[in-house]
Image (tube, rainbow, N blue to C red; front, side, top):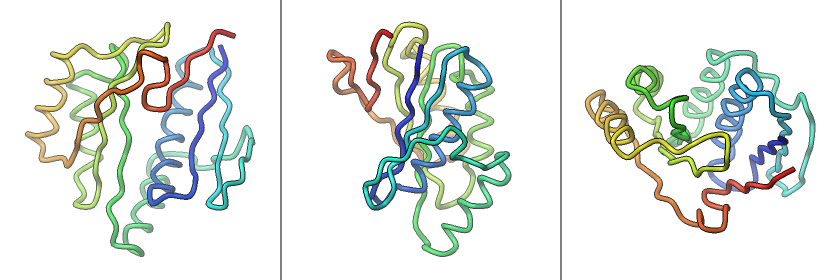
Length: 162
């Protein structure tokens, strides 16, 4: 299966989109046998395809860049976290995420994964338990609700058979 990760574009969350894409691509490369293709959209609406586009080597380096952005702009940064059943929806994952998201201007957007075959959405009880941990740890977050799953286009996730 080929997976295209589209990120960037001219919007206030440009840097956040890059950070989210980095996490998603790193996980997919390490944990699946899928071919992962990054598609970057610049601030000037140019589409760039480059296999080695993201040169950030680790989370410490990534958060350093994010913190520099916050220091410069004093703006909140949203981290998109897609909950996938049995992959990243455990209590342990919630606590790890909470530990990373302790800073005042960090904000988490919890996204319920939309089934596309191999991966499944987290169950409602699991999502609620995950959210309770984030609340207890005082993490700023919101849950994005699903739209478009009936056309396999929810939250920008397009599923095709290749």
